[in-house]
Image 1 (cartoon, helix red, strand yellow):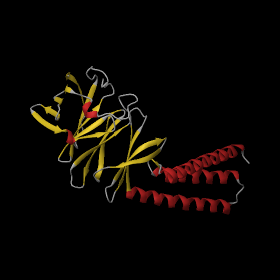
Image 2 (cartoon, rainbow, N blue to C red):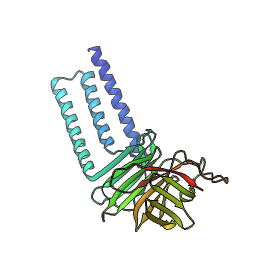
Image 3 (cartoon, rainbow, N blue to C red):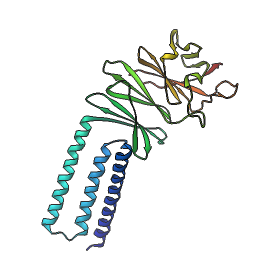
Image 4 (tube, rainbow, N blue to C red):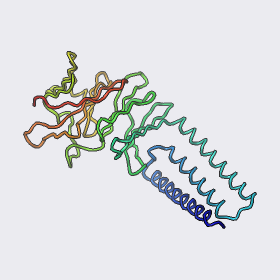
Length: 282
């Protein structure tokens, strides 16, 4: 047997075994802890690669006659086509949104049932694996517009079936080391300014001014996400996200006013950049 073919054959065999064991790990995690791939299409693609590598290994390592090679290729082709059909059906039923953070350290995952609009948010588990965290409160119509506000804060803006607009915020860190919970809305007292926006925190809620337009939000209309962001709502629709900047320091355990920046991001269909605000007066 040609030495080059033998080396290639054993390499393909090794790749097929590694991928097979990886798929086996996934199935164990999925059955025991409801772990899934961040993108379910990866399951079908990896299975196809297992078949391709195993088929090439068989042909290169075994002294198969012409009929034997044709039989192996035929079985492999049928298996690949079957998984191709399953992959197509999955893509038709489930809309998967995966967005990698700007620093490549984490990712944001939503999986939507195309028929019902029900959308589930998944948290990273490890590697390409995720676990379901929660279902979005409003079934999603169409696709979401995703924007990373910071490296560890991402906003998904979407419409519900009644065309109302909503924002879901994924957060992947904190600004107070060792803190398990922070009331985000109370962590930035005072008046904050940036561009044409002014945000003031009062005992009754938050006041947002843009040019001469003033919007008031009671605390009941402030929805918190994790320990890094809140969404300002009116009539159950999202209007603004307020996120804590990476340089934000709350000073919640000392009399110093907060430092750093907070970030405002408007809930609209238009493409626009988040606006950083700094403390103007405590």
